Image 1: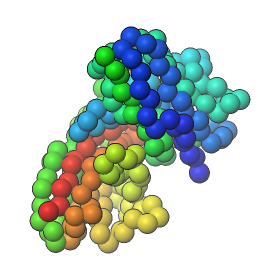
Image 2 (image 1 turned 180 degrees about the vertical axis):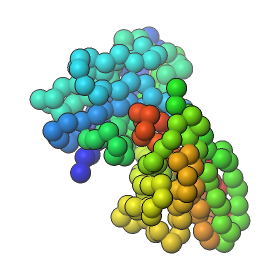
Image 3 (image 1 turned 45 degrees about the vertical axis):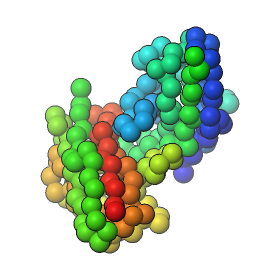
Length: 113
Length: 112
């Protein structure tokens, strides 16, 4: 079964600084990878996804992620964060198109003014 | 784009009562829907897979007699929490896979 490890439970960062949120997944022949953001008391919002093709994926809100098959990673970056980026971020994986996503435990990003 | 709705968005009920949560695919048909549960400050955990016209498949540790899932049509799956207790208080989220990965907005259940 697939599993996801988000290496950092909390990441504090100053406003306008860059940030990287780390995600590793258990290896599989094929994987589909996702990053979601969740603001307090709200549902999930898809930031970006990797299904196939280019390993560098650009998403919304200035986020991008890179699929690295050899390191089984899908780390996400943003070059300059804003206060409004403070939220919980979840990495998720599935190994087939019609199977449920498996989520990591989440990373709490706190942007400090 | 594909949209999944949930109703209600939040509900408060008394201990011992049952609560039904609806998950609808608004502009596409969903033969498979997934139900997740998220406790405060935790991640989403898959509860069950709901298949149209057949019995749901539950994850290990999820009581199928307590969390009743019905997927009677291609656009509607329901989750009924029977005899709810305070420990069932959680955020319940459904998703459908037919149009990529689409999540509903979630239902916050508080059992008093």
